[in-house]
Length: 345
Ligand code: TYM
Image (cartoon, rainbow, N blue to C red; front, side, top):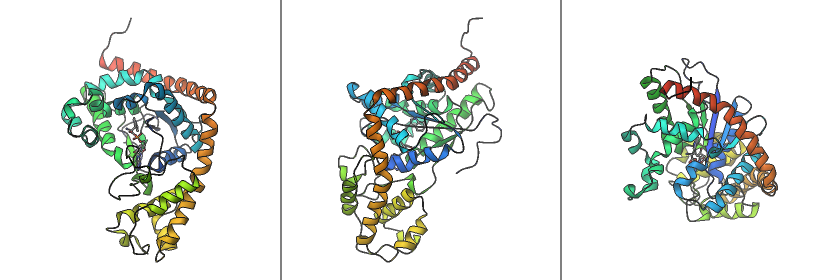
């Protein structure tokens, strides 16, 4: 866990994070973010969003979108986010996200966004044919966080650059509008072996929803048998599991599996290597598959139960949207004053 927000900022400490409702969640989403969401509830006021405004940058089927959003809410709750203690809501239900994003579009600089590697990856060689929304995606992400003046943001490593941009936008807003410390500079919470989960087939590619092969990832809804098959087929080499961290150098796939084992059991990498060092993957892989199934199966069962009751999920989401608005609207009202928008006298 990193230090608190810079001491100059005097507002409350608050956690915000979000996930896109696209194509089901995988182990990277769970270990990189969701598992941390659950833990942070003991320490902070937490706000967890399902970012459907971000999802439309890649054109999901409108008939599916609302259900996909409900499914992410079900995953949050099934993993242990408590909808009473924390706030769970859908981004498009709180219109101030879009309003603040526009203000930030006028703060962020083109050059800052042109450097975003995720845009380059997503747009490929067709940047000029990409939507403006895809380009401005990280500005909306900054608005998500700062609409709640959040001080801490648990995310996977792939979001690091977007979080740096959020800090830059906060700092520039504070400076341009001569409003020192109006927004905090949000701290990313990225540490731990779960922060960068790689493909099961290629240790240099991140585990991702968009990979065409399902064998590259563990889905949160995979059953024990599917998990075992995928882990058995995961790429490794012919050497045994190393006995120390140095022995992981140059063995990206092995490092990934050991990191997954550590993250899912909430143990250290050293601890896993002490137990399995010198043993073959014929021993390591079934133990890893078992640990994964032990963690994910109860969550998947709870997700199925929740998904069968969309009415109950909607009640959670309405309650969450009301709570989110109660924080967001006064902050947006302050922003409107700082920017100088008209207000009836
Ligand atoms: P998204 O939906 O792609 O991913 C959700 C979370 O999962 C993490 N993650 C991973 N962590 C470790 N290893 C992986 N292979 C892996 N793949 C995904 C992501 O880092 C993320 O934490 N832009 C964000 C959503 C967002 C957001 C926000 C996050 C919108 N507004 C405000 C934080 C705060 C995204 O696309 O996440």
